[in-house]
Image (cartoon, rainbow, N blue to C red; front, side):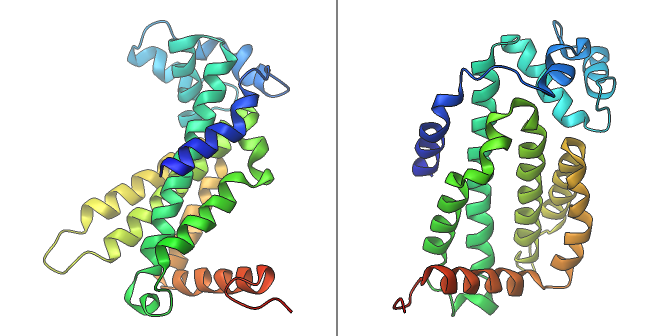
Length: 225
């Protein structure tokens, strides 16, 4: 986990002074509703539901809390984005590791922890993540991804609970994380359709096919031809 934290901050440390751009202005800089000075229920509701993108209350509230603690300090805003990215990577690690350790895959992927580690390492440093991390307003995207992965992790954990243990806390957490993903950005709607994939027990096969694709592309565990 420490590797993910250090690497995440190391890669994006040079973005801490990047100013507000484009959609940052209407949603953050010029948005009076996020300028929290008191944490009252009224102010929180206004920030969440009266901001320009009122269908993204969770993300709006995160901008309001950012303002409450450090106003328009861009370094603070970027630091939060980096932390969200790192947390998502850690959740993704546990999700992949847990999925590959289920009975139907355990014997084929004995090194599930290593596979999860290197998969997340590639994901964490991949340039495709740059916009979501460095573009402050795209915290919406990062938060949706974070809660999205969390919902999957909680679902898998719930399915692996032993018969004499309660499953509802895991599934309740899964549903809550899905709602938080939806409240961060509309891509959280995929949580519903992907939930059907999970329910149909197709997820292990999908994840397995992706691993095979990576092996074929990068010759992982093979002699290059």
